[in-house]
Amino acid sequence: MADPIHTLPQEKLNHLQKKILFTLFFLALYRIGVHVPIPGVDTHALGEFFREQGANLFGMFNMFSGGALQNFSVFALGVMPYISASIISQLLTVVVPHLEMLSKEGEAGRRKITQYTRYGTVVLAIIQGFMIAKSLEGANFNGSPLVLHGGMAWKVMTVISLTAGTAFVMWLGEQITEKGVGNGMSLVIFAGIVAGLPGVITNTYTQYTSQQMDLFRILLISVVCIAIVAGVVFMEQGARQIPVQYAKRQVGRKIFGGQNSHLPIRVNTAGVIPAIFASQLLQAPLTVAAISPSGRVAEFINLAFAPGSWLYNLVYAALIIFFAFFYTTLVFKADDIAENLKKHGGFIPGIRPGARTAEFLQKVLSRLTLVGSLYLAAICIVPSIFTSKFNVQFYFGGTSLLIVVGVALETFRQIEAHRQSLRYDSYLKRSKIRPRRGVGV
Image (cartoon, rainbow, N blue to C red; front, side, top):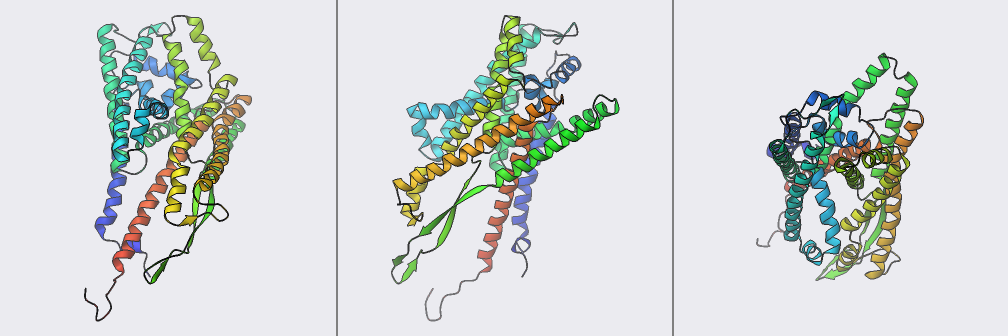
């Protein structure tokens, strides 16, 4: 018997191909915009400055933007203002009654919250754009200013350009989510990180040929990267299969139900969102250092929150664990699932339907989320601690690998789900249901 996916009409196969090509085209458009600089900045000196900042928050922010901040392009802020606005809107949803009511109104309420998030993104982009313009105007590298022709006019032009670039990137991400495959915002960050991989490999090879890095350190980096990828794949595929039984019920002369099923709960329900949110919030000390009038305050913040320091690791781990529990609570509603199971005659063996089922699901979810949050924190922090002991510059570290592998797995999972839906439709169309003889249609 032939595989149904190959017997589908050509237009159905073209639909999936168009979604993939649409996603690739918009990601390519984003990468083109990364190389469109804002006038008035010495991009060569700025590039040299960021090459020296590979181990601190400046380097991490530049890595997430795909080198856009290093080029000082119109996409320099990337999706970070949108992520910050999303964090604020989700936190306010729990606190503000109006937003909480909107979140329970279904698709219309979610669209309204999304609109508020867009407004917040523009406001944050204006604020961050002004802070970047102000800090760059007074910055020097090797005695030469980074901004060639400053002034209020240049600041206004920079803020407008950065805000417009952020709004365009936000639109790109939403279009990918709606018409392409995968989560658009995550794929934008994914593209930015992957774009820096060839440069990291070239830099490592240059250091090896110039005897700045020996073979042992290169092998150490490779082993750590492989271990992170294997750990992420293993944990992302892990899930708790909760057995569910459906009671038999009779409708007329027919009996429905009586089947067994499973309710899967992933170990890491939140995915890479906690790591992205935590990384974004860690940009706040960098902003404070940029606008601080005292050089001592900026020096203390840059030293204390340098990746690999104990304070940075502690705050980073705490933020990851917090957002893992917070985001999981938002996406997994134990009460709603228990109520739906009860309505459809489903129950967990040994657990009474209703409130007891919700308590059981919440207990299982809390335990799995604890394991998942600790795994996320370990993936993001342990490589930096481990490599710092061996004095290795690990630019493409645990956080970036977690995002790359996690987003890739989620995207392939969505593609496979789309293929399965096409295959299911093909089975339905191939099945010809004929009425019994003597019975009118």
